[in-house]
Length: 153
Length: 250
Image 1: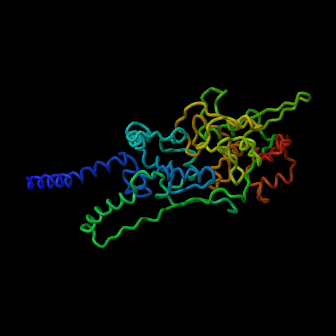
Image 2: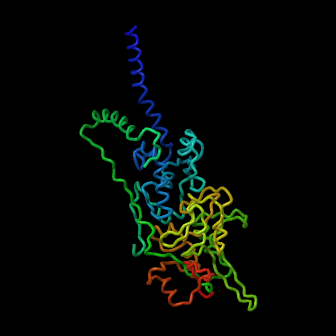
Image 3: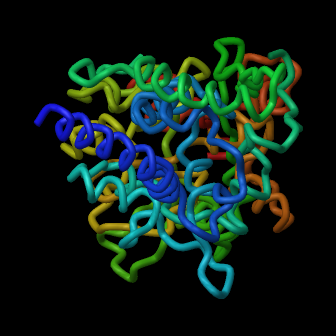
């Protein structure tokens, strides 16, 4: 009787050991959508588990700094989330991150959270907008800062 | 930073994950230690009280039938014309003033006057309407509840309310249904160090040059020099709001 109990436990541990990599691969695959810039990158602007847990706080702090104090080019920026995580369709057009199964919607739908970001914020990368042409959107990942400060600052 | 205290900490997850990863990493790459890359934060210093941004509009140079500044503003901020003039957002609008006795017509553009003492800020119940430290009056849409009190308080009728759900907004100007908005003096440009608003750029390109934007606190800026040498007016100066937008030849 006792020996069978042990073998059952061993079996479960063995199964778990086998399943773990598969589960991990599954979990990782849900972080990013295919055909997005993020899919080709090693990690987000912070470790993935930190971002998963705290992205709402990061964005909330950044938004006040930007809107009220005019601080731009912060490490955490919603427009950068979208630039990186929006997937591209067959024509190379950005797909809305709030569309069914896309980056933001997939998770928020799963956990039944309705963020209000996208009532105002754009859900696709801006290709030729006023922001891009000015270069004021500072890419914390790659682009070197080419900022000209106003005189006297 | 996180306020989700009912959940297990990230540290615990990282510890568990890290222990497993470390066991694997040891066999893969002994002696290699990964450091977190420096955070790459290239934040600008933000608005400064050393500046006060303002605008000078020459009514004589504002040309009849020209809408270059309005079009530029609309495209810069993604203000789409929905064909409903009663509710469409307008951040800058041409105004004609006709003297009934003489028939003389003044043309000018009217927008948020970026007052030093803005009535819209006084009345806002949620602190959504605010004046930045560099004098730009803005609406923080994260706080705006759409009560439209500020629209009533503004003597210049400068603010618009967004009545309809929007999509494909400009990244430079996130905006949406249920919030009040108005001219931002192109803060996204100011913050990027571009000392030219969209309307000024368009007006200059058209060859009219009716709009001068600049720093009112810098005595050497073009706007300060013009204000010193010309007789400019504030609209409704009697309200003593000390507007940042001033007019010439009015």
